[in-house]
Amino acid sequence: MLGSYEWVMYVLLGILLCSSVGFFIKWQKSKQKLSRFIDLTIEGIILSQNNKVVDVNIQALKTFGVDSKEVLIGKPLLELVAPCSHPLAAHQLLQSSVEPYECMLLKGDGSTFPALIRGTNITLKDKMRVSAVVDLSELKKAQYTLEMLNQTLEMQVQQEIEKNRQQEMMLFQQSRHAQMGEMISMIAHQWRQPLNVLCLMSQNIVFKYKMNSLDDAMVTAFKEDSMRLISQMSKTIDDFRDFFKPDKTKKLFDVKKQLLHVTKMLKPIYDTQHIELILKVDNDLKLESFPNEFNHCIINLLNNAKDVLMHIPYENEKYILIEAFKNEANKIVIVIEDNGGGIEESILPRLFEPYFSTKEEDIGTGLGLYMTKMIIEEHMQGRICASNVQGGARFEIIL
Image (cartoon, rainbow, N blue to C red; front, top):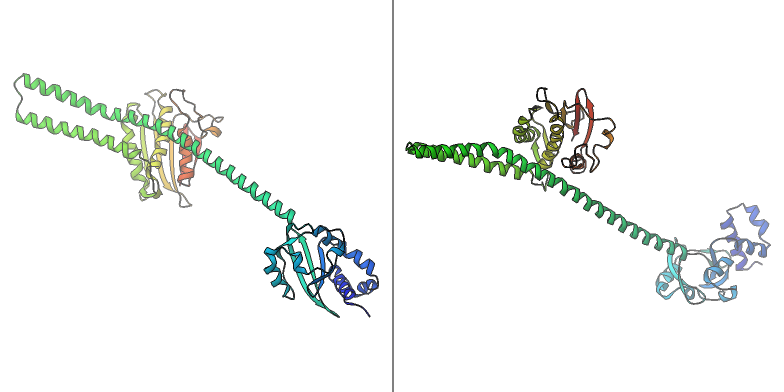
């Protein structure tokens, strides 16, 4: 009559091989061959009865770090489990079949190691339990190494992000400084005419006084005209200050109104260069974004066109066309086009690179178009492109 051990071996062989009944019968009388076959498995196999070990395979010996089966056979199962995992293991042993779970086991030298265990009860002649054990030590080491690598990589990524952010801020500040220089130049130009008028009015009032022809009406007129001019100059400063103030939150603004405001500010300077600003802007173009940053981008593009047109003789027609409309995709398109002769084809691919400029070193910083592209793409989630058209260059912004 077959003992419990042989029955377990037969069932285990059937589980591992998933083969036919004929194959199972072929091996039933060969305990030595059966044990040799079980020893080929990559999992440690423990057979237990009444929660005591009755047999193990070779892989189980390697897993627990012992030399012979006798070291493990006869031991209670919980003696193979680290104390910290006793409650878990005891609970799982009460179950007839369990899904794989992790716990800490004890090697022969008393050291602990993480393992993945799956067990099931079988009942043939006697009730027994088959447990499969996989040592997770190498896997845990690999996971720890990977986690450390990920943390290091994440730290490096954060450092690079911060480095890029600092570089971006530096470029932004440099661009701001260049724009501040332009702003001062614009204010100086806007002030020149009212200062000249004030100077003439002052000379006139002094002349009238010396000629004894100064009366109350003249003094009142001088006062009113002076205050009007001073107020105009003060408003100019406020306009430029607000114009270059960075936006902190998005606002819903009218595109046509912003473009009119920009051209109004720039027109006096462009008039001195005989450059005509032509606006063809549709009504009711609303955009939720950063209006001042939008203004900066438009000014950068207009000033680039102006710098090119300045080198064209006065007798030639010089203009900058500004268009705004909605395309078929319901996106707002702003087009800035000039008749300055266009851009060299070899330069077009590098046009938006930082520090790249075709102007003289003391004039161009190489940051205007780069910052324009960065603002449009990163802050306003749009895109910008440049191309040549007949007689000039064309910049197109899609928002």
